[in-house]
Image 1 (spheres, rainbow, N blue to C red):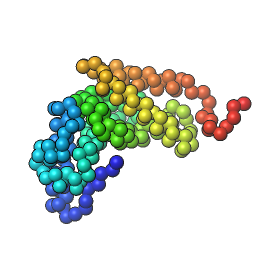
Image 2: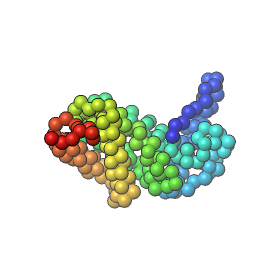
Image 3: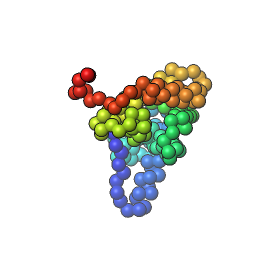
Image 4: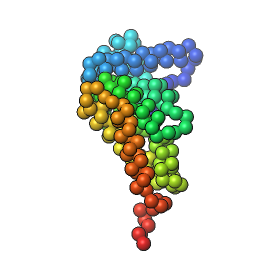
Length: 204
């Protein structure tokens, strides 16, 4: 799901940005406070001090606001903080700390009406990091294979993260979860032997 703002005069852009920001903030706050995504479009609009028409115009529906809020939160507070040089441990720890800090929002989002779309959209934000990790682990892969490996990595990480946020203890331990991710990656790296074979190749 993609979100685009209309292009217009500068003053209109400022109004659009304020309305958008207010709706995204209201979504994170209300879902976090209530522990559920069962927040109506009317409640979101009222909390953001905008009309329902503005909400529908920019996000389509209530679920659109919730997904956009997750994308905004991850992009603004996590992706900008990740190390410039991709390093397994610092990256895993940054991811774990971010999701633990905002668990009150992410947990209901991952179990609510838009869970599938939310997971799929948020995971797509990490694809480039997964592509880089795949190349680091397995060497020079062709574009098709590296994309498939990256998708497998992000899907697995999403499932592990969802389980941790939803079913984990009351007090989450980001360091422990980050260490788990690094340990899994180390096992995959150690298990790899030789160049990757395509599915059409027959074993000797």
